Image (cartoon, rainbow, N blue to C red; front, side, top):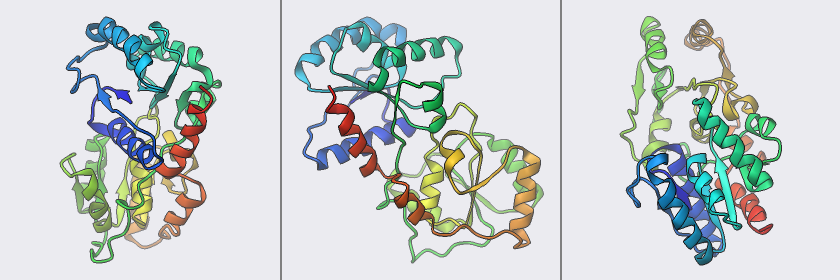
Length: 283
């Protein structure tokens, strides 16, 4: 497993699938370009990465990369046992060209994680992200605070906070300071969770995390996996105000059976790895 950094959503994705592959008896080595190899950019790392991929392809049965900047040098090294996961739409037009190239080269060995990405990259294999149902669950010993809003991302953060203050909603922002293993407790304290990411978002796992913890009101958008989730969705700040007012006045029904929905729709890391192994077996 080769990716850029242990931090962020991709780092969590790699950690979860690596652990689940190990449970299936598959030996996994995880290498990051930034921390482990100490190479911090695509241009600086390209030739060294290309050399390393030629070497690794002889040592490992599968080389699994994450992000176009890691995948491109592997393709140029002519790695045959290569699988790559692409986690979002690049916001940079040049990066989009590189990502398009990588996915066209890999075809069904290119993994995309949302329905929208699959529609754009037609030859890819669609395997959605999952959620860890052991970490993300309602802690019954923790009482929810009425009208408390949870925020876990920087997307549109200032606009959201401005709305919350205008409506006098209390809120709690994680600021990225909580350990991954402790996030279930955070979701167990809140009554409302809001995440409004940019449209290029690949998946946005926080909605699933909130659902797994049975947060009564989850507000999102149609970005990423949001288009198929049974959550409340907004497309503007004014719409966010409307929904929050309805929640405050108890004119909006809380969400129900969210964990059950996740299980029925197979959005767990165990299910992700089941499908991933099918891709590995094609090589």
